[in-house]
Amino acid sequence: MANNTTTLRDKMFFCYNKRVKQHLYFECEIDSEFSALHPKTKREFWVYFKTEELDKALAGYRK
Image (tube, rainbow, N blue to C red; front, top):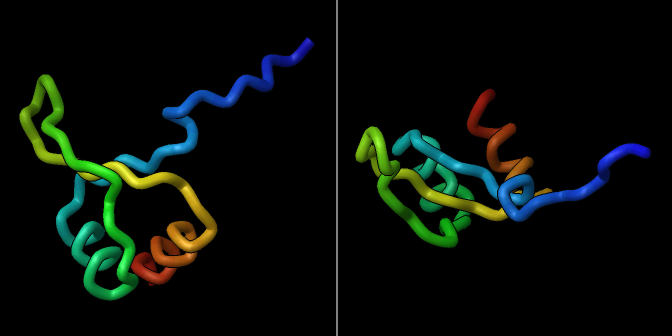
């Protein structure tokens, strides 16, 4: 039997790129749920819930 368990982590997008974060916020008006520091690298990252809107915004950034 296949394991179809979806975890909370599977539903989140972790953004470590300030340019992507700025694109999402200023161009697409999508704000992160929260930000944090990576425990090992101490780099700031932003967390978003995966949505169709977020997918479209990220696809637009990559063009």
